[in-house]
Image 1 (cartoon, rainbow, N blue to C red):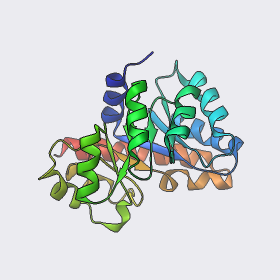
Image 2 (cartoon, rainbow, N blue to C red):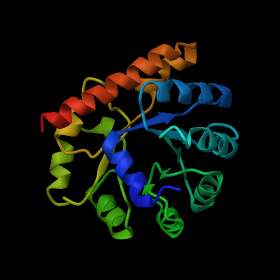
Image 3 (spheres, rainbow, N blue to C red):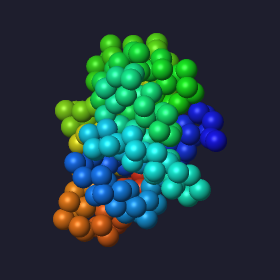
Image 4 (cartoon, rainbow, N blue to C red):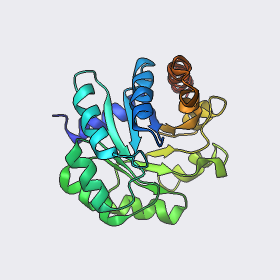
Length: 216
C-alpha cells in the first residue's frame, strides 16, 4: 500500500490529474483505459458517474499493479469521501473547500485536494492542512495568477482545473502550478467512441507539461 507521501510524490511527478466525468459507467471505464494507455499515472473518477464507489473499487484493484493512481472527484462531503476511501480511492478531489472532508482524509492518511479560488480560501485550505489545492475554475483567470498567488503563499501547491487546455497548460506550469487537472479537453472524444484520440491527447498534455518544466 502506498503511503500518502508516495501518492503525493507521484501526482507531483506526473503533473496531470486526468478527470473522468460521464453518466455511463461503462464509458467511464473505457475512458480510464484510454487515458492510462496515454501514459497518465493519475486518474480522477468523478462521483457524478453512476455507481461511482463500485467503479472505484474495481479500478483501484485493476490498476494497482500498473502504476496508475485512481482517485475520487466531485466529492462534496465527508460521507462521500469516506465511501470513496473505503472503495479504494487513493486521493480525494473536491470542487470547493469543505473542512470536514479535509479532516476526514487526514485521518485516513489520504491526500485531499479541496477546491479554492480566492486568497482567503487558499489560506483556509493551507490552515486545514490541504496537501494540494484545486484552483477552480481556472478558466476565470489567466495563467499568471498562479505566480501572483504563490507570492504570498509559496507553500501552496496549486492544481489549476477547469479551462486548462493544450494551448495554456505550459503557461500554467511555467507560472508555478504544481500540476493541472484536465477533464473534457482530454476525454471529449470518448463520447463518440474515439478512444485513440483520448490516448493521444493524454500523451500530448504530458509532453507539454514536461517541456514547460524543462523551460522553467
